[in-house]
Image (spheres, rainbow, N blue to C red):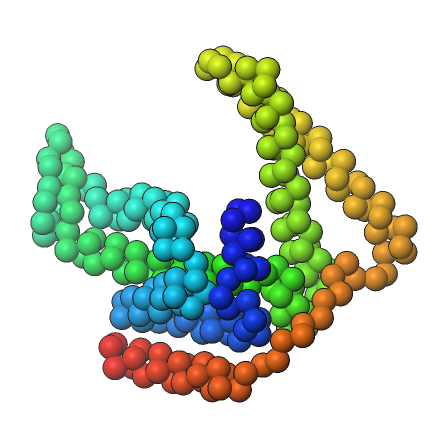
Length: 258
């Protein structure tokens, strides 16, 4: 998480206007989700990965590591689709099957196609989100949300949630170091006890931090916004025209590959 936030501030696209990066990512994301087109999903993943590694200059090894975590959840979901269970008398055309009593565990061509469609759509969508969070800082994202005229309450909740993630990570690291220095994780029993204490301590500290923030807001009258952000980056018309070309191209691909 800390590494992701660091890349958001030092990447090769940090000087690109945040509205352009948000528009670029969400154009591909919306087309990937709405059309559920394999060609568009694969194209989205390829373009986003190229943009992250070569344009934003994010190390390829780090990008692959970031993709591994959601990929593990995706694989487990795909396995539940690929493998089906039915009664032996059911009319199916399996590519592979095992019969256990009156039940049959099988895989069919339709299952594989459905799993592949799901996998391409999800991995394409994930690459869009990674492009956005690796190239756009939270301040820039909040600025875009503000320009979209979203409710101030929603914008401040997004900002505070993001802030408290780092507060909790920092507190967790401090507590973990203190427990480790007292050999709190030397065996399974101590490990369970230490983890339970860590969770309780995090809950208490997060409550205290929330109360302190609430007190700070109330001391200012609670009327001013917490995030008053200005962006000094100019919009590039050429990149905006390129995004329009992307929209036309994706729309054409979705029509031709139906």
